[in-house]
Image (cartoon, rainbow, N blue to C red; front, top):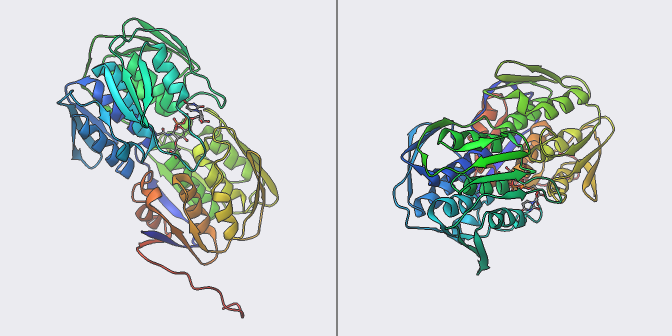
Length: 432
Ligand code: EPU
């Protein structure tokens, strides 16, 4: 199993191009099930999650081929298959997004429940509630959702849950509603940029959606959707991760091809911490030199601070001049990175849904274990600032969401290499 070896201590400097958003690409790929005719998607990130999704789509009769470095052409050529198997769906939650389009377009679906996840329980009750409100008949059998959507009819659906709205739940209901008869209203829809992107893609295929970007979506069903050509939005989480990496190394990093307005809460926090932030027309630059001020961060649905950058900002605050509190309101158990950051010398303790972070003067490189995608990113960010080598094990998680991360960091002056086996020698008693 590959690991990344990160040599800390080099301030990152330079420009990094940001790719297309993973969490926009996955539902948009699923939405290709709905199209009659070929779809060409641009700015598609080359990630293992995207590869998994194209495999699931292939099993569902949607063929795809790369027609450029980041352009993917897809076409539904056979509508007979309706089963998304456990072996693939369990690998990533985004694949559950085939449920809505299968019900909407093919009238039937047999989709494995997504696997368990280390960031906490991830229920699908809201997905099922929304689809049932459209008239889908759903039952759970042997770990699969078995659905009949032959008579989908618009209705009013409240999709709020205990932690707010649901991104992939909104996506699933939307993708069933666009071909349902009549008008569907989704109240408490997710307003994340990735959901907005899906709405724009569906509209480009001929769907009628009003209220895009608001928690109140009104969808008038149409009889068919056609193929189209569409460019996916930039990945705000990839951009935020590189900006935090630039800041923690007290460097100067410009993320290009970025939508700064998707990062407002993050840039606001960086400014509060004492990092210089400059916003260009499609870029953001951070400059860091002095001490980091402690601060409190609470993750919230947009426009709040994104949960997918919580682990990375926790790494930065581990080096602040005082005590910070990071509270997780989306996934209250998403704190697997704390114990690994503490192995590197951080002083962080978990209290309920919060991390209490007592800033330390420096972090020290250590072998650490990546538990999930964003925890891996946080450990790399921490490793870039630590003294000595950090070995991030189980690095396959990072390839799910970051394209060529070691090359992109390398171009900024970081020393990061991928190795198949690496052992960190223990320290000696005399400190050598
Ligand atoms: N929730 C329910 N019931 C449901 C669905 C969700 O209670 O039926 C709860 C969740 O437990 C959570 C909250 O609602 O407390 C929000 O979850 P949401 O459904 O929005 O998450 P998701 O759609 O499963 C997507 C991203 C995640 C990202 C979250 C929040 C994809 C494929 N995944 O997940 O991305 O953290 O939205 O923004 O789009 C990542 O990229 O590392 C990642 C985990």
